[in-house]
Image (cartoon, rainbow, N blue to C red; front, side):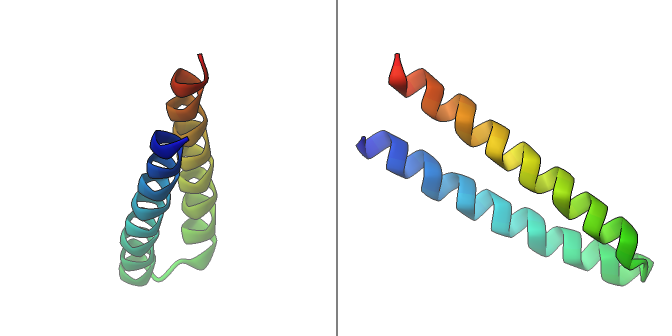
Length: 59
């Protein structure tokens, strides 16, 4: 349970960092739709990463 909580916290931190990078890229390109799409992909990847990280702990 302790490691699962840590994995979730790490997932949140990584998601926030990627979201900040995504916002910077969006500002540079000045193209909102692309930024939204990239954000969705990043969120999905973060959720998949969290699921795989916790799946190993559940065994």
